[in-house]
Length: 465
Image (tube, rainbow, N blue to C red):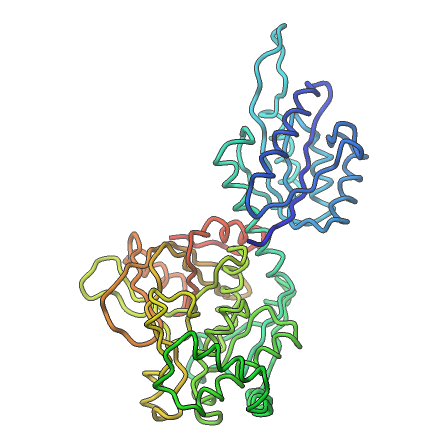
């Protein structure tokens, strides 16, 4: 699991109980050490008195420390009442995602005094952030050892990973979008202005030329061919089609490296079939399996949705680019999450039933010989998170929902899964009324809260169903 480095600001205010603040700081550090995927940086007792941030000097030292260590998010905790200006100064200087929490009150002192007043002081910190228009999440008033606190911090860490990887991302646009698919239109100006992102144009004819340059006997071509044959039954594909698939994969992989791409949106019909001679479905499957995220039909926002999910998963798994295809003919609240044959083979319910063959739809358009290269299987069961980023009039919003893949005895074409959701009619109505398109990204696991937190920091409106 990828680790996310977070900066911890344990803030304290005189004259509240400093011994209590020291104890709470240490308990927080101990709790953070037990959290998967989290690495915490905090001012040491050698850097600040008792390692507590209480004034402008402490804020400056903490800012310098966090900048030096390149933290990806900030945890502000009131160990006692806390110092609102010191905490706000750190957040303001670093412009990173922020999570605020307070600590619970200890027992009264023998003379009836209070030790902490964190419950009161936390509001000073949050109002200071609000006043400065600094977005933040609030994790509650907690004991550091509580499971809910652990869940909130790890969710925050996932959101921080998504923010870091999303801003400034470079997305490859390989070829032209389908002429009749206005659905896949991309507002590059909005991506530049809102997220400092760049859409990198890559002509298909250039991709084909570079693919064909790979010698058949090159060790990388041979190795890629062997991998393709290991992960799927390729009996239905010709040796020529498999060679083309290996070469195309290597060419696109090189573009990822040379152009420093975080994701790629690929024109996968009809030019690929007519001018190169195969379907690119399994190529996109294999790239995505390697973390080189590739969407279909030049859907740039679809590729960016995949990127958010991949980052929020801490790169533990990979997404599948899907259509909202059909509702189940008999089962309530079940729909078919499907695409042509582009899912990573690691997501297969049965690895022994993964097949590489002609793509069902394109074979009727260009003929089966030029449509080879779709990887087909049923996806493994389990909880999934489904998301979709869209943009209208320069404003972005994200659909977030959860479902569960249910096993099926059906034999269907493409890469697919039946997904049960709590209320399909409500979900579909939301898609229709909110302008969400027929593409989405689906990933195993429940990362809905992390994606929602990411959206808060990215200024993306959330539509959660």
